[in-house]
Length: 315
Image (spheres, rainbow, N blue to C red):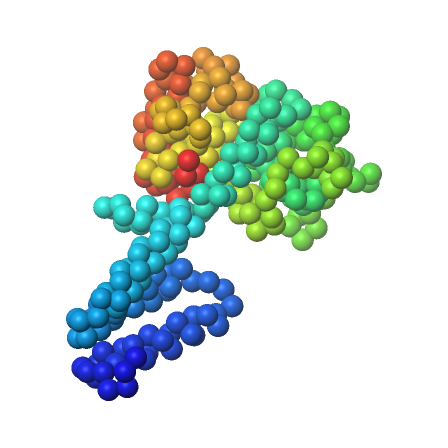
């Protein structure tokens, strides 16, 4: 950069911009929003510099910086699960696109590998799998169990132990687990998820915690709770959230844009008969979880309510 570049304000901007990029490189963690702003500043500054000097190479550099800003914004939007160029307000999602894909893999694993067919057991298997997905062990409290299963928690927990899917410490019974408090939770073991067994999931501890928190938010949704939901209704809420596009429309991943969700897969995951799914979808509409829902052609079609969009899985 020429030391005598005029106007002086442009020279100062280029100096500050160089300092800002060097400072960014020293950051311990990336900040894509900040980086996109720096690229935009660079694009404006180099365009102005090119105008002053009539230098074609500077115009090309300005265009490259503009493209870098656009790409960085898209990366940031994808990481947060927001629509970068939409007309409405940006929605910060609980899950990224990648985490949404991991959530669907967990749900598919539950759909095909749950040891018991009824909805209550499937809900417990889902939540305990997310607690134990990394190491095969996890902590759970009585508040957790009763929140998921209400008065049925002890029976369901014991059935999972009897089926060999779940293991409690030798001195801990299902009733003891229901009495456990946050300061002294009960440790549970899912043998099929222990190290040394074939690994059904590949995500790290941060994603495991994010998925577990996401599922807890769905299952514990206040408006759904007010409708006194069954386990099947809660499972349907989880499934619809995970299988939704950024705009909330329900869609199976990999279905080439075919709207809606395959009814048989939905029913199996929720522990329902296919003909019973509609009643639970209506309950989710009443709870303002789904804005609309209908079953046609063997598919559940619909859209998440606006308030639920932050929990969408970003198919």
